[in-house]
Amino acid sequence: MNSKLLTLIPLLANTIFFAQNFAGKDVDLYLNMTVKPKEIPEKLQQYAYQNFFIEFDTVTGTLTTEPIGKKKRDFKPFQLGDYTFTSDYSKLVGMEFKVTGVYEETPKFDFDKGKFFVFALTNESLGTIYYKYDSRYEHNLELIVIGGVNFPEGYWCEKITVVKDKFEDKTSFYSPQESGFSLVKVVKGSEINYFLKVDEDGETANVDGKGLYLLFDDGTKMSKDDAKIEVNIGKKGSFIYTAFIQLDQEDLEVLKTKKITDNRLYIYDGTVDSESAKLIQEYAKCIEQK
Image (cartoon, rainbow, N blue to C red):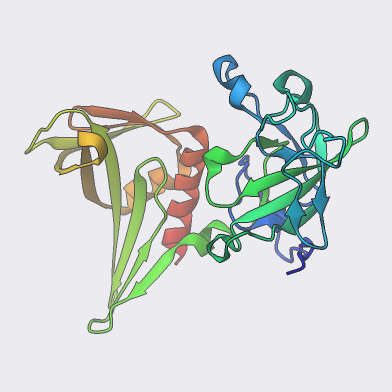
């Protein structure tokens, strides 16, 4: 199957600045953006930069992932050895590239269709190289988008899941989960209720715990002393603690306007990274608008 160049569809709506690097399957958002390889902790650098390549066939949609030709030329930029799967971190880090093409990779297996894409990355001194992009997992991304991806207005609202009850006059709206946080809106007739669900890992088993506490970037705190905490068994013998609370309009306004930095469920603490905090804000705005 021939791969098709995915061109950036003109955005009719205004765009919003959102300093995030991962766009999932919406790969057209990367076209014409400036990117650079992500900085990696020193102890992990020898394993980094596995997804950069020298050759890509835009007709067949296939990357060259082995030594090239009879002379066994390198198939990766700044390759470390004949058959290594990484590029030299010290030479590639810090280089800036423009994304000049976005292509769908032709998969070896049908079940991988639509999962992997290839970015053409152009640098004045290095020329054009190629990056294999996994649309499923943000932690696999080895690129930083300078200034962040420009997401169109309303982009995050499209991520809200809508479920209509066939037997009742009820519609439920669910946000994706970010750093253990998710929001729910339930509309039944003329009645509207909002809820917040928070999950946190714990190493020990405690039942009958109470209390959900959130810290915000402006130093303020939201306290729900009577919030019941449920516990379930997680992976590898750990435990997952969950708070599910109803929000009033004031609570919702706080979540829309302030960024969460930390949370505590009973005695179990967690932190919220800055990108997730921004997403929680966006989802709070969207779920109110729905």
